[in-house]
Image (tube, rainbow, N blue to C red; front, top):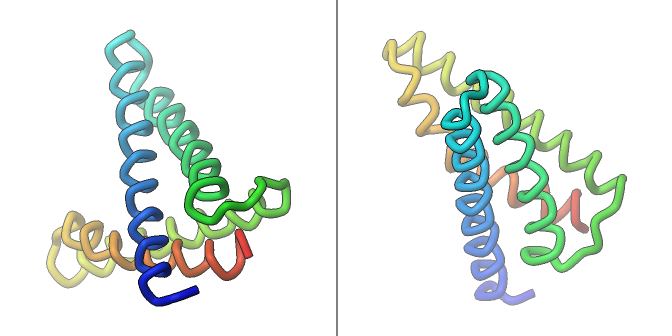
Length: 124
């Protein structure tokens, strides 16, 4: 794969992430508007976003058929990225008393980590 193709693939990966965030937030807002409890609405949005994310990346970004084993590896990466996000937030709180700063710092780290692990491990 050429350098230009890798950059296009990474841009597709980021676009897929934005699409999935819209699904996550959109479903949550729709369910909140329908009177659902915020925890249930947020969980449903997260789950829908997670499934759309996996399907998008397996088919569009990496051109691979989805499988149970790739989904299990995907869930491991989701867990790892969650821990990375929590660590960044905790560090920002301890240093700056600002959780948002940690969340913002975590976004590019999670994107790069997710892309590399997706490319070389999940959808290899």
